[in-house]
Image (cartoon, rainbow, N blue to C red; front, side, top):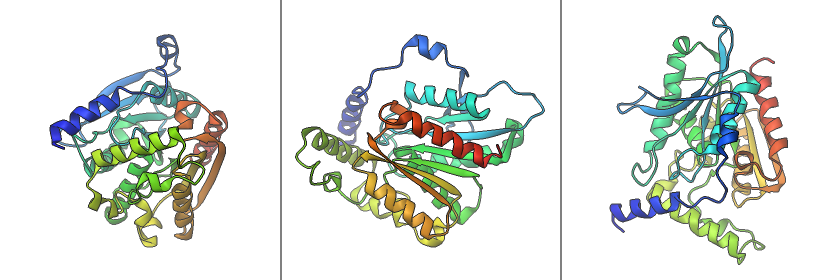
Length: 299
């Protein structure tokens, strides 16, 4: 398949969403409004949506840098806006929702490098942002959690930033295994599960070449314990009805073995994407997000 054919197929996939869009009334009523901008973290700038709550001008803010899901091929959605607005309001934090470059137009490792550069920029410009560098947390959902893990793997060598903590929601930690092989015996043969596995395989083909999956920047579970030991405290969330559950929990275990303080929680009655898509046990999971964040910003 040619590059143009790949792009055309990806554009078609982007139009197919599993969930309804958020109503305009709900978006208009969000507690913290978004400000769309480009930050000069790369040559072409990084597209972000900033949520800044009203706080005293002389008070340095905690900061949450959020990386959405979407299989590395889909951009941020209305549900990401809802999540970030409420987090900015409830935590009292500056929130960046990073709309990173997508495959196949920008294949691996373009998004990894851009996300890394964006995080470095936030730390090096904290004074201008009125942000406390001891209270910057990284949040990632699905593909976004893979990207922040990869950014921290890059950071193990450069030591360019030091997050207070990170949240990894339903992380794809092992890109080497065919998605069909990740299905449990009960899931294999289920029409919906098989269709999702087929979609995940297509997205991987958009994102990287098969031989690139052995890079720890693609499959974070392959990183050494020495590298993983440089990670901050982590909250790792998995979903009981998700084919990525086992690899996410295995990654949490490897982080803990590497000396990282890990909080790992499986939400047994939820599916992939539940925290952002607001289904299953999402309310309990977001309360856990808030508690974890508050514990790391001194509240």
